[in-house]
Image 1 (cartoon, rainbow, N blue to C red):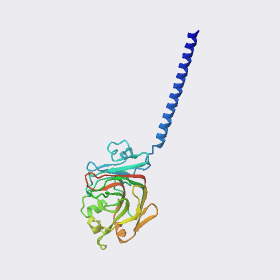
Image 2: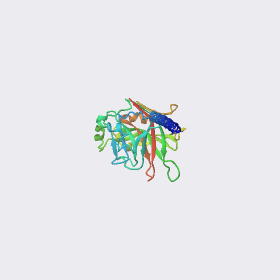
Image 3: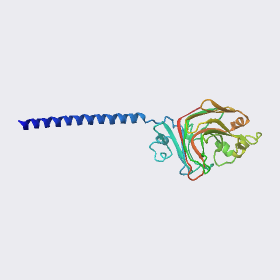
Image 4: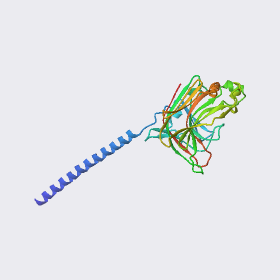
Length: 295
């Protein structure tokens, strides 16, 4: 009788432990599933439309990636080291360092170039008379310092000029390069704007087509410290006028003779990370959370 009771007690204990373990396992599985769901829900993908952009990388000669390949940047082995998601903050990260550069520059970049018609690879562009607006929300994520302890500089947005094929042939150039009318820099935590000015305002339309007909203005630095925080940049171009707006409340307007004369050129927008340094260990990372172009 004693053996029977002991056996029955042992059996009940095993059944209880089995049920308890089963309940614990179910609870653990449910907790894992909840955590995985939370991780999935927290994974944010950048909402920037790349259908009308190509990107230049600091490798190759240099390397360019156009649509549709650029749309698969998250799995593209060429792009992944330089252009990738910050899935926590929902930003597109542009990373660069001194490497391959374009023919008309000494510096490298991981930078987007507007393509109004991706099929013609940049032949179709816009004039100030036609107008255009670019607006981005971005931040400097990380950037190296020089030997003096100052941060290196990076160009984060541009309006670049372009010669038409007819203009190129007219002045005997071998490419379509024209000066950049607008360069916007991140400099030691502030936003600095540089534009082009015509060296001789009496230059003819043909003379103005040459790169060396244009010089740099003195530049303008917004009196706002953005540091490594998010900020918004908007550039509005229209006939005889260009406006740069920081954080929707700080603005500088250009509507002088130089903007009027610039009407001879076609243009395209650029955005990303153009590192202004040749120092061996220099680098920069720029995050874009939003980027929209309208015409």
